Image (tube, rainbow, N blue to C red; front, side, top):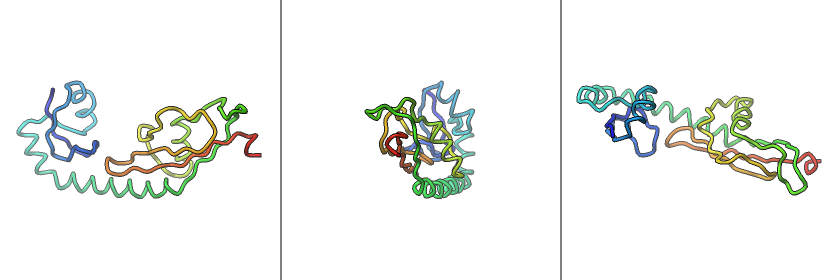
Length: 152
């Protein structure tokens, strides 16, 4: 296990400036290269304490942007027609890529990893998908899947 100092909130229980123990590979391959943490040396801990107010300000800005995006997403409803069998089972499916494309068409930019779909949607009906925009902000997108036969 490696001790690191967290530079931004990205898990609900990790605050900026906190020292956490993580697996070596997670620190070496993800946290440190992506600027989310630094190794927990005395020098780095002191440096982050000095920068903590600016890091918190940056996090507040990210949180307010996430809140604005959440309001936009909550107002949207994604309706799509996909060919389906008589029992409502789709011939295709609705994936995370389809959801991200819909949001981009509606001027909402998010990353695929923020959409918490689980399994692809493979039947007609109404669904709600959670979108994590910030560790403290998430929203849901209502999705309605129609068959061309049922919508006529």
